[in-house]
Image (cartoon, rainbow, N blue to C red; front, side):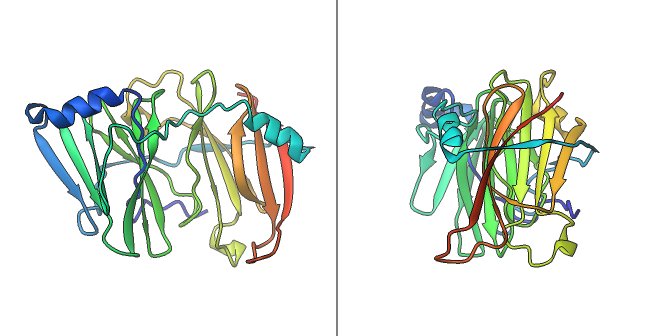
Length: 258
């Protein structure tokens, strides 16, 4: 599997306490540094990279119906807050404040455009990404320290937003190879990485925490969600998605033994 360091930056952030962010924008005295992230400066934007330190696990997937999957979605558990209140968004840019640093992200063209995804209250971090020429990389920015962690990229394109279990103890990183023409490129079509974050003190600690990893050559992930603290549900499809054709969809549930 090719797990290279991110090449381009993609941004997605959410505020648990938007009033604090708004107050920071109003009070320039709190901001001591401004970082403009663009096509040139995004290289080396993060000095901390999530490292590959995984142990393979086997998962047993049980088929469920589409209705069962949709019922699980109605539980409406989401660890990522996608409300943009408190994030300053303009036509071609957005900015956020972490600690005493104002980050400004500018969309320059098709080959370089940052995106705001949301905020994780559970780990006090924003999720950011930058899309580029057939590449999509993701980052976490810790709100209290402004530390930046570049996340592992399972595939050049197709990494999904990480999700945290309802009890806040586990974080699931996942990806699916949307444009794989040959399995030899990566050796798999989809990957799940489970990380124990119950003892996480700061974002940098996430860099070397061992993960439990599952990968498959059988299907691509459409959606994935926690349904309780030890089970996830997935919507997947088989084969390459072709425009105007309905993919061969399937719904699964699996238990993770931590």
